[in-house]
Image (cartoon, rainbow, N blue to C red; front, top):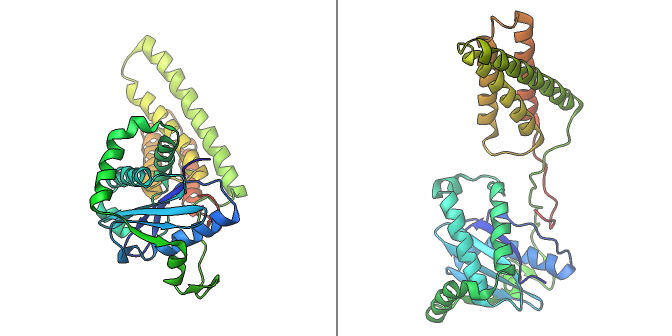
Length: 303
């Protein structure tokens, strides 16, 4: 069994979850520990930089600095120095990727979904790499823990402090949202088919023109690019519709612009109806991408 079971990054001032690892543990004790971690996250501003909350089967460790905190659920066999070394590494990775402005402006849970993969990689590294390869980092953390021990809580403390007594909660905990895309619609499938068809037409015409131009002249480079760039844009539009991507609106606008400019440039090689068809498909795809929303995540499931 892994020593580090679950990890997440939260905003200190309000406990907003910013990113989290995928967990595959669904025992009742683990799910209860997940619930108490969420409760503790909402009170991190009241505690010093490092702390631990221990229970019967699992322990929660947290490390915070400025407005970013990293939290982990570990087995009781996990050394405290290893847990805090993991959290510190995770903190540096996150703060190197996102500045305080991005963190402060986050308005929805799990706004930095793309960081989940980084958490998984760091967690895997600490779970499966020999501790001898991390001696220097662990030694540094051990020295820091000697001079500044973490605050020690119990998992029961986190419940009582938040109005939970004898297993009965006085507050309603909303399920944390997920960021899976909504189901594909019939119109969305149509836009995908038309987009793939436009991409194929652009690729075929571009390759044919390139073969012809290499034998005749080099003045057709602009026309070749005007075919191939919309081809790439069409494929990327399909990707944006099927999968979540940060800054989706900006990317959609750029892809639409590339397709429109490319087809306008090809006015001499395409008639007006062909140009309108390609641009119309691009607008349809853009509309479908922007109207396909994200689903909510079910409570206590892997992220």
